Image 1 (cartoon, rainbow, N blue to C red):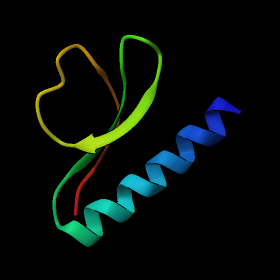
Image 2: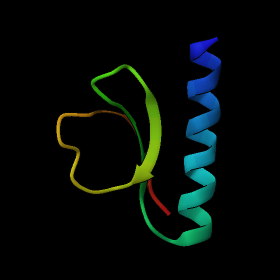
Image 3: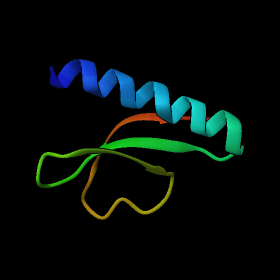
Length: 53
């Protein structure tokens, strides 16, 4: 289940990068959560995917 969720988040990040014209990344934070955010300071998060516009 987590793998499919990660793929969906990567697709969402690609859509955001295209529509907003800014790079977005999919990261895994210390608690194990996987989130989408604008490319910037990671503060200990692990980058899973970087999506460019």
